[in-house]
Image 1 (tube, one colour):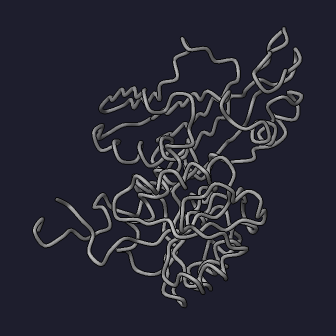
Image 2 (spheres, rainbow, N blue to C red):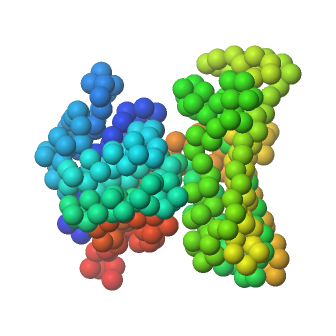
Length: 332
């Protein structure tokens, strides 16, 4: 049987929203890890934790209580606010993987991630990004399969999402339930980072990039289990990023979350590469309805695999496939 050396990896979950709770549950059924603590600013949220799991107020306390643990950070933060969270974990001596949108530090942080990399190296820890759903399927997965279509000149990746199971606060943060012009005026989770990651994977710099969101509306009220959205308000959106790459190649990534989905809606991930060779891929199943288990699993697996990496700041594509990087002697 494949096992990890040195006993289970101690895990700390930061944040106890829906994703944090999902991560707590996931740890119980994952080999080679042991949930030891949660970090939350709301002590009342810690009710019902598994026996032996302690609730702590901050990452510094987690580092003192469980030195060398890894952190699954499920807090919603971006840019410099996110960088502060990651640096706090590093200074506490904790490896950390974030679910927030730190896909491509070079385009998202003012110093291209240099300060985070330095603090991680100083404290001999790893800072990793796994990507929120749909980050993985819009960047890591396409980057991994494009070698199957050598000579491609254009690639389109489209990911619909059923947003009905998302918390109301998340929907409205993304513009659902708001006026269409609100949706069009901002991009809370830029897909530019995913486009840059694909470009890096294929070795072609981005020379031009365009990104936009367009609201999906209905001419009738949409009644959901937890809220009603008036006619004319956004019930979803199409978020598109087009990157023109060096050498005349083009990458288009498109995310289409909607609250108007039904059980018959096609929610397949669709990838199409055209040019010197052609590749068409459709992936359905585990991405239907609730994305939180997929996001939590991606975080945990990335974090455990990342333990074999050198200290520093790492991109979402860096960890390999080996679970933990080491196998028991009988499997070598």
